[in-house]
Length: 248
Image (cartoon, rainbow, N blue to C red):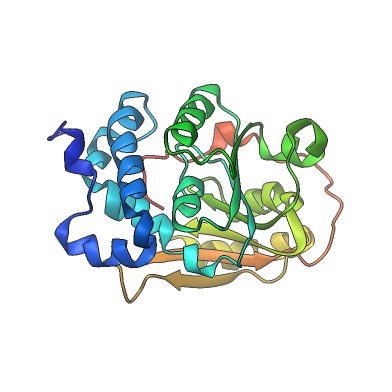
């Protein structure tokens, strides 16, 4: 990191301050504390790439928080493959009315998540669940996970595999929101049929923050329309997950 002073990460850059204030409102200071954690402990523990530290606000916090206004009031949210808490912790900070389960299979990541949830005093409505998504869906009483109104993911897997993991955790009528990058349109075209086979509706491409952010957030969204029987297990998220230091 070019600048190791934690105070350097506590506030958004001047050119992003207006957008950050719009999305985080009175919780901007809390978002700043999370930014410091990501840029220091997150880097040290290998959850965020060293080169990402100086871009924490634009590439991570604002990229994630752009979808916060789209969450229904008092929604239950599951973040699949949460990694360093992106987007789950960001959404919990920006939307104090929502409850979030951070589902993550790797111990070093859940250790970090547990510490951050405690440090930010989010424990009354944010839970860390060490499990693969398919385990949490198959054994909800063991992992204390209920189907959610919204299931989110960021930089996890291709859309067909992602649908196999996320749809069983989504209430019928609920929505999967997958934060994606430049491949989003191609993935929709390639995997729309697989999403429908798994019980989802037609995947739709959405863009958030196109007015407020220098680079808007691209999201693939689809509703869980019905319960579908799965014929085979999905791959392990811990082996296919994209590097969390990359922005989708």
